[in-house]
Image (cartoon, rainbow, N blue to C red; front, side, top):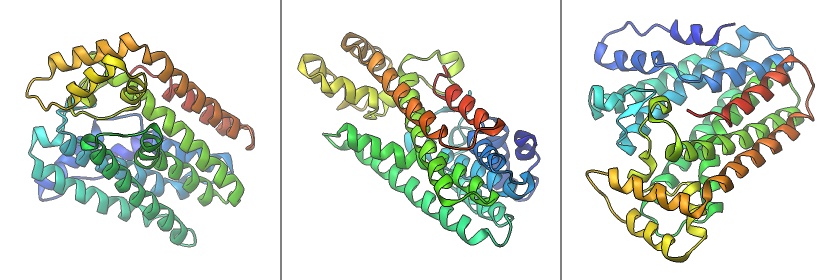
Amino acid sequence: MDINKEILNLDWDREPYGLYEPIEYTLAAGGKRVRPQLAMIASQLFGGKDEEVLPAALALEVFHNFTLLHDDVMDKADVRRGRPTVHVKWNENTAILSGDQMLIEAYKLLSGVPADKLPRVLQLFNQMATEICEGQQYDVDFESQEHVTIDEYLKMIRLKTSVLLANALQTGAYIAGADEQAQEALYQFGINIGLAFQIQDDILDVWSDPKTFGKAVGGDISCNKKTFVYLEAKKRGGEEAKRLEEWYSQVLEDNTEKIAVVKEIFEQLGVRDVCEQVVEDYTRKAMRILDTLPQNTATEQLRQLANKLNTRKD
């Protein structure tokens, strides 16, 4: 089943167009479709039927994109997937309202899973949604919080990023009839690839090619986000760490110099190699979990997808 085709076939030709057109614009922009892929593959791993897990897979992708609309408003991001963000192309009110409708549409899609599976699927989905909001709030708090530890940061990205991947895997496995032990193993696999994914994203925000990254390079620096790269740099202390703190205390109209100087500090402190090693460590841990599950074509697909995500350059 072509999950991208199924997403693009969702019908947004409704009135008022000001509400639904931004939803179509957002979903048509593409993206990696990681969450629905994970749900489908996890179901296939246990012999599930694609048509039974498809509603949940579609719901997860719509929900994920809803969070991006609101994140872009909160982060004042201008570009997403190489195109103007919804709040730039339209306005902030549109991004908020269309995002709200996407959340509703996600629940409507979710209601299409088999009736006997729906209560548990809803329970898992609601838990995930709450945790993502908690993670987003921590992310916002950290921007103005003077001291953030690496453990606090890892907790935040587990909530904000990892639980959605983990939920996709667990939900797909549950709908296919996997036992609780297998569901938990897949959930933990998702947590670990999610942690690796987000730290890789932190690295790419500093060192990626603007032509392929799909969003503005240095956006985290502009917003004073205390990413894994920043926290690793701060651990080294000394004058360079003090310089980082000074730059991160500023809110500027033009961040060109700030991005350049902060990147230079990161490079002087040699944090890129450390961060890339952490990505590799989480990916390796995820693979060890995967080794405990049935080995078939679906398992290999998960292995390849995890490696692709965490070695990506855009």
